[in-house]
Amino acid sequence: MLKYEFERVRYTMEGFGLINGTVYGSIDYQKVIQNRALDGWRFVGTIPATQRATGHIEEMDLVFEKEETL
Image (cartoon, rainbow, N blue to C red; front, side):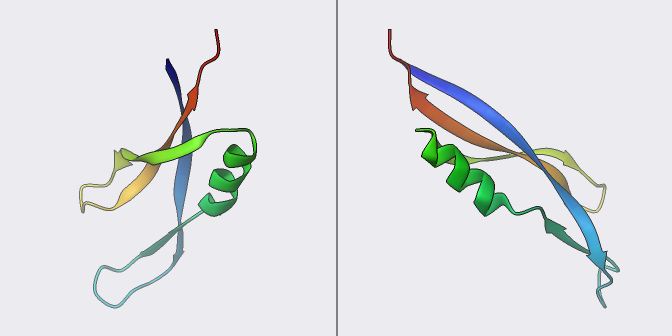
């Protein structure tokens, strides 16, 4: 049976763009994925968690799965 866990990643404002006014960047999500892989978790995908009215994602959940041993 597979077990699933979610880890929330927050985007932060890094500067200003010419068209949309704001540029967003995320924390180092690659380290989160690599650290989970070392513990036997497999990265499955992302789910937007919170979003601005402009459509910009502020937070997303990284989804991980692992075979559960009985």
